[in-house]
Length: 237
Image (tube, rainbow, N blue to C red):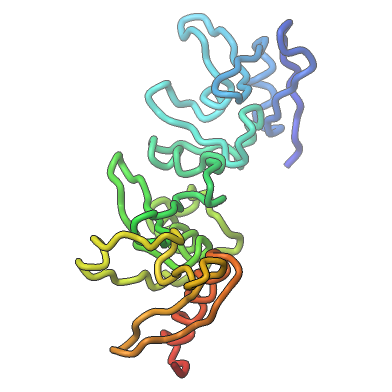
């Protein structure tokens, strides 16, 4: 289907165009369309007698202000029917651009107490905790799996293509939840007696697993995570 550019009239934002399907061109061209900016996104809007100000995406879909409309590619001026879809507020929020946080992923945060990454989803104003993971990537994959379950095609994911299976989170005991982290800031990572390097070890099935000594606590923590993952897969201690 052909795409038609609709010129927009605006002194503040000159030279902008909206995009519509050819089938909607005749209806759209009956009005003079301007530009409105909302939360750093441009939208096309006009004034229709008896209806007041109407945005182009609502005009094309024939929905009023009580219905949310999602732009799949986040371009508010792209009003092709393949890019706009009615939705509820939760679905609209799920397709927002990635929020920048230290993890670099949606829904992934660092748990200072436990020394692991965790992920959670906000769904209808309620937080759904998904668990703690050895790496930010695992936590992000867990978020993707849950997001697809909750929002389907509206979910804006961390990875493309996404993982199909939910990663297995750590199972913390009540004692582990209350135990503060060592000075390294990472669980199972401790300063050597000289205080210049970092010793990595942990308890597994009543045995002490010595992972090694590393130059930085971050390296030691990654080594611990890899060793635990190997044991979980059935590797030798």
